[in-house]
Amino acid sequence: MVPKPFKIRSPSSGRKYGVAARSLKELRSKACVLLQLPVSDCQLYLYEDGTEVTEDYFQHVPDHSELILLPPGESWHGYVSEIQRFLDAFSNRTDDIVLAARGLLSDEEAPKRRKLLADLIQNLSENISAENREDDGKWFEGVESRFKTKSSYMRYSCESRIRGYMKEVGNYASALHPAVQAKFKRIAEVMLERLKLERYNGSYFDRREDEKVCLCTPEGWFSCQGPFDMEHCLCRHSINPYGNKESRVLFSTWNLDHVVFGAFVCRPGLLPRGIEKKRTVLPTLAEAFKDRDGREVNWEYFYQLLFTVENLKLVHIACHKKGNHNLSCDKPKIFRKRKQPCKIRK
Image (cartoon, rainbow, N blue to C red; front, side, top):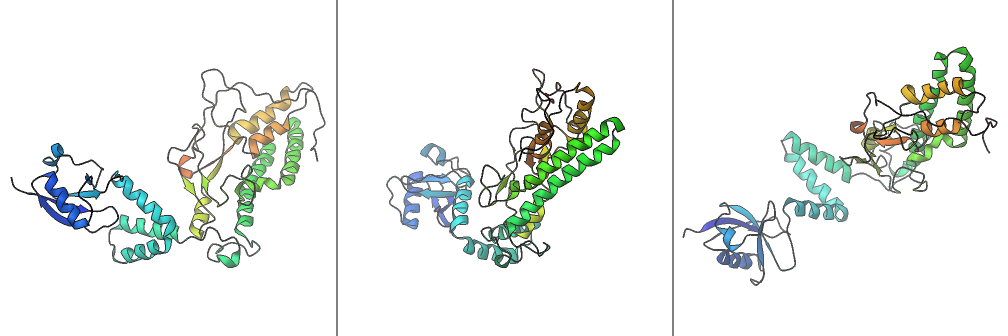
């Protein structure tokens, strides 16, 4: 039988050895000598997918295949194992990986590989733990000097979004009939007062806040919560705008999308759909003044729909569906049980 050629390596080293053998026993013996491992109980696996090389499979393995030799107790799952090894090094040897990636990038010509290396270097070079301007000046490039910490700027960023929603509520009043307009504006003013007390819910983006209040981890990682019509993000988008300037800028493309979390009671068999401000929430609020029949409009209900995570979902731009959400729901309970003064509890 003509010897079959293979490339042998260990999982901890990228160095490969050329070995030719007529049987699995011969191949294993030669491989153990080269890699200085005991012959007994060592196993050979295909590098790509982790398939174990057995006596029956030996003759079917293509020539020059790359094989991994493992001692007893270890396993290999192909590229999955390689990625896991890299992730382990990612958290323990960051500086070494950045140095190696820069060396590879300097000689790389393929655009896709250059992009992967550049993104890796950027992500590993970020200074997530830094909070103050003097500790991470690059992060604050383009940020007004009045912001001294990352968290204060991120809080402001969230406040700006909520202020924008409040502005839409105020502008909507101008298109209403005069008989409804004054009542609508009064509700809008009450909502504005509540927002001021809550500091425009800026805590959602502030990593210094309690985890029950903010939408990120204590380190600043945000996860996409998926499109309005799904419970989760299938792509598992995540980002840490506290890490570097590029991530901070990119995070501005993420959206606080208005969705339904049991706010509207749908007819049986219908999937709850997103509740949009201009197409649903605001028109329903305006309509409530026509149908209230002496009852007090439950402004707190609409406040939750418009400005809180009761009906806001943080989504990556790719998961933000901007089209009509095609609502088909029953009328919500928009009135209080009995008439109460429309004021904020302090």
